[in-house]
Image 1 (tube, rainbow over the protein chains, first blue to last red):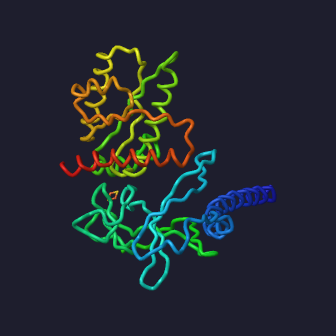
Image 2 (cartoon, rainbow over the protein chains, first blue to last red):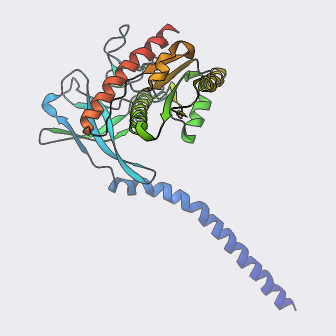
Image 3 (cartoon, rainbow over the protein chains, first blue to last red):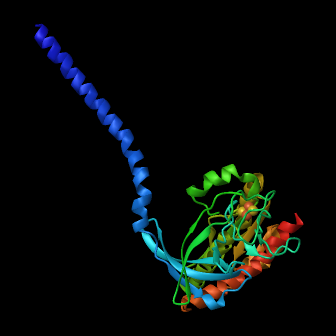
Amino acid sequence: MSKEDISRRQFLNYTLTGVGGFMAAGMLMPMVRFAIDPILEKGASQDMVAVTEVSKIGKEPKRFNFKIKQKDGWYESEVTQSAWVYKNSKGELIALSPVCKHLGCTIDWNTDPAHPSQFYCPCHGGRYEKDGTNIKGTPPLAPLDVYDSQVKDGKLYLGKAKPRKGA
Amino acid sequence: MKWSSGNITVYQQSKEFVDTAIIPLLPLSFGSSMRTSASMADYSTLIGEETERQLHGRLFLLPPFTYLMEEDSETLMLRLHSWVKELKAEGLRHVYFLTSDSQWKKREQELGETLLWLPVIPMETMDEDYREEIVKEQVKQLFQVILHKWQES
Ligand code: FES
């Protein structure tokens, strides 16, 4: 009699730990995935696209357009993207995304007469310094994204635009 | 932003920043005007989407207002006015109609809102880069109109 009791309790114990263990695994899985994903992603990073010859890049930001393949749901299409590119005082090439960090309008360079030599967003008057830093007191709360870039054979290649930390 | 569920959360959170709507007016016709009506649809869609891309954060590109070319114009006008009424109540102060259909040009006064009328340019035989250039050029013009209105308000 008692022997049977124990075995039943044991059985319950086993099954409960089993279920608990299973649930814990379920909770762990997503965490592990989050931890691993960025590493996996690197291998599959988007191809870099040739945008312009380096010799055409000056100190003043200039807009360059380029095409990338974009997956929209289940079909792939070509979309035109643009970048504001210039050479900074250290001689480094900077490529900024034209998408305003407030609500996503397209910014322009030096178009606000009251604030020359800044990026300006026509939608709600967002402004950014030449290096992309958002100007306090205007709607955007983060600096412009920066494209991954690479120079090869005198050409500038751009990849994904990546966010930076806020000012 | 476009009329798609992905944008609605952003819209609801930032309503006060979105005050402009574009409604494409697209006629539908079979028979001899079929090609024209389709070209108009192509063209308005391209122009509308490019404008939306640039002014994403302040402008709503609505689904097109479609009608048969032969439809009674009084009824159309009434329907259109009821769209506008709804949009205004929603806080979209600037409403634009985007079309290539010249019947609207003739009745611009009655519309009450700004008509962005662009004569249709058939694009189906154009190569892609040229097409893009034309669209960019046209959108620039629309920009002037829209930005000017924004500055006034
Ligand atoms: S979208 Fe640029 S300031 Fe609002």
